[in-house]
Structures are given as C-alpha cells and as structure tokens.
Amino acid sequence: MNDRDKDGMATAPVQPRDRLLGVFSRYPSALLLLLVFAVEVGVGMFVIRDVRMASLGAQQMYARSVLGLRQIGELQYQAQETRRSTLYALTTNDSNLQVEYADQSREADRRVTEGISAYLQQARMPNEIDVGRGLQRDWSAYLKVRDEVLASILEGSTKEAVEMDLSGGVPSFERVRQDLEEIKRLYDGQASEELARVSASSRRSVVQLVGVVCFTLIFATFSVWAIQKSRMLGTVQLAKLQMDFVASISHELRTPLAVIRSAAENIADGVVEGKDQLAKYGSVIRNQSRQMTELVNQILLFVSSRERKSRYILQPLEVSEIINSALESTSELAREAGFVVEQQVEPGLPHVMGDLAALSRCLQNLLGNAIKYGGQARWVRIRAFREKAVNLHHGEIGISVQDRGIGIDHPDLLHIFDPFYRSPVVRAAQIHGTGLGLPLARNIAEAMGGKLTVESRLGVGSTFTLHLPSVRETTRPVAASASGRNAVAKK
Image (tube, rainbow, N blue to C red; front, side, top):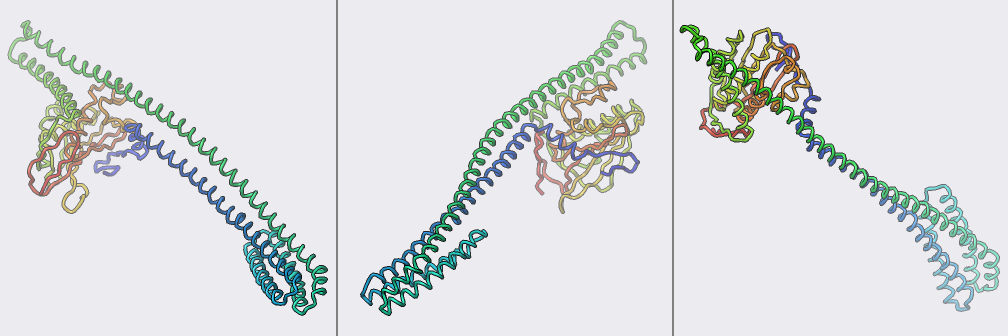
C-alpha cells in the first residue's frame, strides 16, 4: 500500500530498524545465542589463520634453512672428494690409479660446480649472493691449479705436481673451505631467525588461544546473564500486562454490571412506569449484557487460540460475504458512535479460503478498534482489493480497515500484536480495552493461511490489512487449527 491513499491520508510503514528491534524483542534468547556462535566462529577463524601462518613459516624455514644446510653439507663433501682424489693421485705411482683418481676428482668437481650454480639461483639476500660469487671465483681458481697438478701427475712429473699443489692448491682450497663455512654460518643464522619467528608465532597462538577461551567464557557468561535478564524482564512485563489486563477487565465488567443492577433495581422497586420506560431500561440491560458477552467471548476465543484448541473449517468464501457479516455485527456499534462506514469492494474478486465465522470475527475486531480509536473524524472505510499474484494460479486478496483517528506511534507498532499490550497514549486517553483484539485477529489470519499488517501515523490514522490467499475453483472444505498452520486446498 502506498504511503498516501486515494483520500490523501498519509500513512507510514514500519521501518526496517523497527522491524529488527521487534524481532529482537520477540526472540532475544535465540538471537543472543546466534551472536555468541557468530563471534566464536569469527575468533576461531582468526586463530586458525594464525596457526596456519605459523605452520607455513615452519615449512618455509625447513625449505630455506634445513634444506640449504643439507645442500652446503653436500657441497663440502664433494669438495673434499675433489681434494682427496687429487691427493690420492699425488701419492701413487700406478699410472692406472692416477688416471682413475683424476677422473674421480673431475666428477666430484662437476657436482660442486653444479651445486654452486644452484645456490646462486636460490640466493635472495645480498650477502648470500656476494658469498656465493666469492665461492664461485675461489673454486674456479682452485680448479685451475688442480687441473695443472693433474696434468703434471699424468705426465710423470710428480715432484713438480707436489710443489705446485703446495704452493697454489692448498691456499686455494683453504679459501674454498672458508667460503663454504661462511655460507653455512649464513644458513645457521637464517635458521635461528626463522626458528625465533616460529617460536614467537607459536607463543602468540597460545596467548590468542587462551584469550579466546577467556573471551568465550566471559562472553558466554554475559550472554547467559543477558538471556536470563531478558526472560526475567519479559516475565515482569508480562506480569505487569496481565495485572493491567485484570484491572481493565474488572473495570469493563464492573461498569455494565453496575448499570444492569441499577436498571434491575429500578424495575424491581417499581420506579419504572409505563411501557416506554420499561423498553428503555430493557434496551440498556440488553446493550450492557451484549457488551459483557462480547468481552467474555473475546477472552475465551483468545485463550482457545493460544491453547491450539480452535479448529476452523476452511472453504471457498466470497469476500463480500465476509465483509457483510462483519458489518452486520458491528452496525449497531457504529450507529451508536455516530460513525460513517464506507465500503469499497472491487468487482470480480476471486473466492478466498477461510472460515466465515472466524474471518468475520477478525474483521469485527478491526472495525471495533477503528471505531474505538477513530477520533472526531467519525469515519471508517473497509476496502477489498486484489493484490499481487503469487503464481499463475493463486494470488492474494486484501481487506483493509482504515480510520482517521489517533494513530499509532512507531515504537508501539512493534508491540500492538502482543497479548495484553496497550500503548501509553491509549491508557492516557482512558480508552478502555483488553489488549486482546489485535492478537486474536492476527491468530485468525495466520490460521487461515494469511497475515495481518498495519500502516499508521500518530495523529493521522491507521490502516490494518488482512491478506488472504485466493482460490479459483470450488474446493473441498479442509480443517485448520488456530496454531497458524496453512491449509492447502486441492484442486
């Protein structure tokens, strides 16, 4: 429905923020538990992410430091093999062994050269690159001396080869050994730094885990306290509403009882003379007894709907039939209050599924409220119209009851369907009521497979709309309970 209808009366729908507050007020425990679960999942994901980062850091430390140390150890071993094979060739006079040792030395130095190249490809830090290039230079220098030593050995000049090795080979290989030790120290330092970072990350994870456990306990304790407090406040509020309800019912019953008793005493004491006076007092007694009966029936209907005892027979009904039944039941009330009831029914409306008596009662409650809170305008409109189609075969029919009375403030819109609730404005205006009419109307609407909505503005008026599912074919009557379960008609 638009914010402004055909008659120009402005209405204000309930804002999303107010709807959220209304949902929270109705389901505080469930929402708090959901919040606890969401917070725990979020914190748990944070801790898991931190643990995974620590695990990734440990893997990187192993890949860079531990594997690097293994590679350097392999380089040291192959370098020693190169040097050892050369010394073996120097210490033997067997030419065949000399050739074999020379081949072993060349094979080992090939592996060292490949290892140095692999190290330089993996190096990232400037100091790693500098040490790696120094090792490459020193190893090339040593291989040059080693090749000359091997050539002298194979030519039979062993003495010259020994002198050449002592003067050039030993110092060159010592520099290579120092370069390898320097690279090993670099890897040791990197491993220590990585281990320190992993240890710090592990300690941080432990601290976070302890913090999560403490936060969980504190938050869970607070949530349980909030839930219990919410329930206690709800219980206190319900008790207050029930006390107000009892006081209101006492007043609603005391007034007609006093009028009936006074009228009856006047008749019994012979104060009433003539048929006209007797008819007048009889009309008073009838009206007051009707008001009491209506009040008692409404209470009984509400109790039965709350206890799921009411059962309705759902069958196809004409919309005009429902409206006429409700207007007939409230015609005398509207006439006595001096209200003009305007009726607008779109032609060609399809049937709706429902129970005639129950839907008539629902509209009677809405019409009664419109008359009670209609203010000085003395005008009420009931309108039936076709709403948007749910699918190709079914749509919804809306029956709205509109007034130009005192209206409802936004905070009160969140509670008007709560049992026993009556707004401070209504209580201040001393408008009598039980606070059961709208809850009963909503229960009936939901039992018919529909819903009840409201649009209102304080001081302007209210529009209550009953939404009902429509049918296109006559269907077999089915039963529905007042618990709000929808009855599906088979075509």
